[in-house]
Image (cartoon, rainbow, N blue to C red; front, side, top):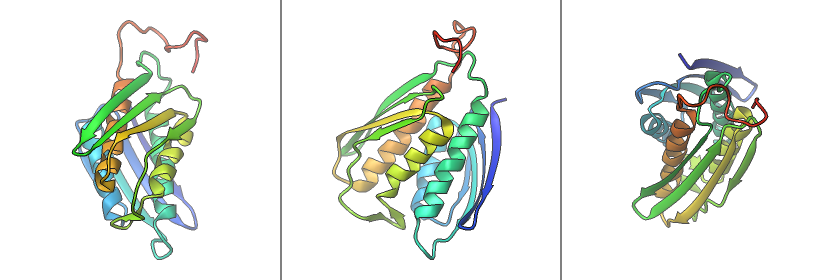
Length: 194
């Protein structure tokens, strides 16, 4: 069972996340940021992950600390749930359309963090979710999970659609990368380790 429970408490946030990589898409999410909840529920549903997120943060300041720290803890949970990564495909990608938006996501579960994105937003907020935090959220995941993560925005003018396409594309790419392939006996690396 590829499952993890991770907790992180700081002076700014208190977050607990449980993640089952081999789930069915069930989600129980409460962060205090409605749009983030919507994105995380979409991530779970479209990646077929079972996800529980409970987060409280200093939302009286702004959304920054809560969104970033949820990304850190989710990345930690992904890394822990995947374990030694023996037998998994390691690479995953998705080109996902959502109305006007078309977003590509590519992942390498390499244990080498790297993040690249050209997602572009025209507004400052989606509900209480600051659009500048999309980058910080996925950056945090990539570094805490040890993941090479790329986004390319092919088209898109509506911020909600662009962001949701990114979350769903990430879910589909992670689902692909985390799947087992019976032909892979160890880890998929010429070095013999990830």
